[in-house]
Amino acid sequence: MGSNSIDTSMNSIIIFKARVEKMDHDETGCQAPPEGPILCINNCGFFGSAATMNMCSKCHKDMVLKEEQAKLAASSIGSIVNGSSSSNANESVAATVTVQVNTVEPKTISVQPLSFGSSLGENGEVKPKEGPKRCNSCNKRVGLTGFNCRCGNLFCAVHRYSDKHECPFDYRTAARDAIAKANPVVKAEKLDKI
Image (cartoon, rainbow, N blue to C red; front, side, top):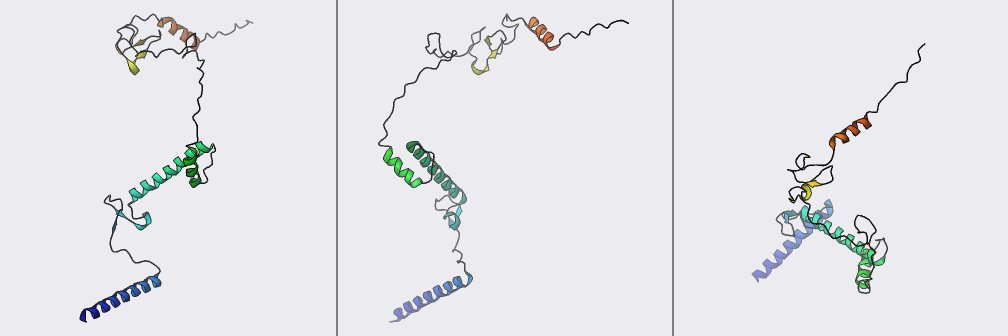
């Protein structure tokens, strides 16, 4: 009999405490603070909050970013399948994707070769890919670090100067022509003598 009376008194105390907390909540209009800090539900070791669905700010930001990417992917797939650019209902897009993907048949497209002179030979055939770029003097591979000379050839760092690779380009006449073009001769008209 003694333990029953203790249980009923404990239950009445618990009920009384709940009523008091409810009255406090009703009077102030706010919830009681949680018992202690809440850890992130992703178990990353940081503290979460109710505003971020019990996640830390980093995990919440990552989750929101993944949701946005999923919505964007679903809308782009839906627009490709439907042939429209509207993305007003993501749920209907997901439903049409699963239904229509199975009914799409692959189409074969014939591609005509381009008629650019640089990429095609005289017969209209595609030229094979050229080998690695090499120095015209020592045949060393230069890759992206090669130097183009005015004579039109490619050289390594050692042979890039005109005196190192017997350059046929005439720099003297090219300089004379450039100076003459930049500085035209100015002559004044003769004055009539009085």
